[in-house]
Length: 540
Image 1 (cartoon, rainbow, N blue to C red):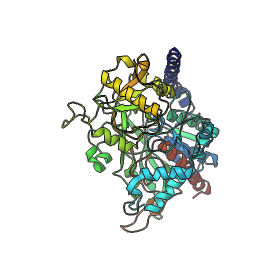
Image 2 (image 1 turned 60 degrees about the vertical axis):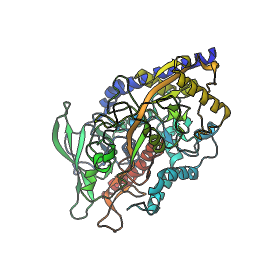
Image 3 (image 1 turned 180 degrees about the horizontal axis):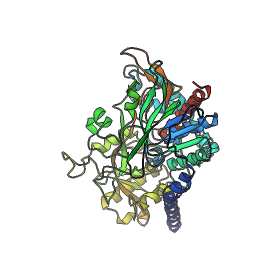
Image 4 (image 1 turned 135 degrees about the horizontal axis):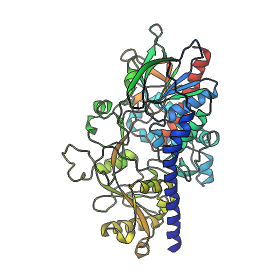
């Protein structure tokens, strides 16, 4: 027992160190050393003085991946980001990136995974929207084609990030809805989203052909009245005080990757999912950019498909806050359990996100929330034993540092929670969860009974949160934005504009698997960048 306690302490110290290094990197070095390398354009780009750049709208992983491939093809890139700092929601991604049939799986002893198995998991997760009768304007065939690209290129995306970009992705875990462990993250250091974004930005800013303008809001896409092709953008840049400055225009092919609309609570979210009013969110409040595409007739699909993630942290310092920090799905994947207000398990923690969220929302809401006007939330306990805690050491150190989780000995837990811990520990020891059907137990190692009373567990309070929008603009295998002239007409590509990331729809259907958000950004972002570069270099 003493050995286990020392090991737990070691992993906790490593986690805290990782959390501190994460803060230092992204709050100090990232804003000084990185931005000192970034040239900020203050005048419009002129086609007469230089070749048209590939214009990437958004600096999340989709935009960064597109920029990398465009530069690799020989094009120049100008990236426009409306926030003061780059990274989008990708920088906050915490569980990892999916890859089927990777060398990291082999190194971890994980066998039997391939793109076909990943495709099957993804189509199951997509649900009825994948079927022809529910597929909408995109159609069942195109949806399956996009999922096939996503899954078939997943191993290559992981290898690209590891080998070309230099990101540590050697740790592999199983998340909810997956039939096998395939979600990759680093063994230490910052969470995977921050690690990937930071490494890509370092590569891009070292390239003289790359320019990033932050605090830049795209006001409109320029469209040729003769051909209907997108020819560039009009944007404004805010000053240090947030005041909007002069308007700029830039010509060039456009990769549109500004993200989804889960943070647009009073706009697109209210329009398409008014039933979610009052739900807390993992997204910063900001309007969706979909209207820029709608102006030239782009088609949209699944706009009412919004993912409710089951676990956003309830911060003890501000429990009613509308913005919640995500409790990574890896916490459950590595062995964590969920307990209701009576201290009992109530769901298979490895279920898909929509299933787990529905189970939580079937519980009584937080006292005072039912029928109220405040944030709608539930108080559910997330508990990790020493084995799970060590497996997510860097994550846990960060969460403890932020005050979102705390460590306590089993003997100091309420009696009903101790009983739940003992019952689950016995379930893991038996290798069977007859009550809820969980088959993957992660790294849980806590035994049942008196032997565990001096062991430390980590606990936090979580609630469902709006997290991701599966709906968005229709696009094809080349990531071209699609439009529909009239009802019943076939979808046709719009020249000059490509889309990738959460702005797009048609891949995830009813539910996105954890780890597939970063994956779609990498896979389709790279395709978009390569396609846009062809256009830029051809002079089209």
